[in-house]
Amino acid sequence: PKENLLHNMEHGGVVIWYNTEDAAIIKELAAIAEDYLSRRKLVVMSKYTEMEPETIALTGWTRLDKFPASAFTKKRVQDFINAHERRFNPEGM
Image 1: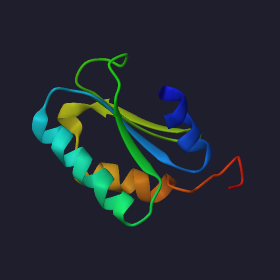
Image 2: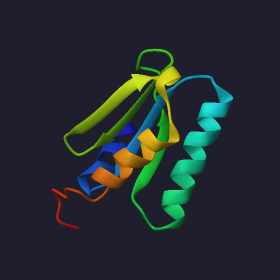
Image 3: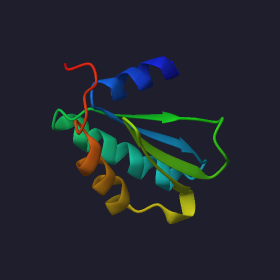
């Protein structure tokens, strides 16, 4: 549920949202998320069809980077996660 993804952000996590059918992009996003999870980082990924088609959004507490899937780069996603994962933890846990 979306509520769980938002709750993740309340603990300093980052959510990778996507609305694309591009299998290569989805696979790369999943690999990024899995890499961070394997290092015990608070990163989750979810399809979000309520967003414009062919769009990716990266969210952290009070932060957003939303862009067309055609502008996706691994570095852009990693830079966002590195800057915002556990940057702010409003619940203090």
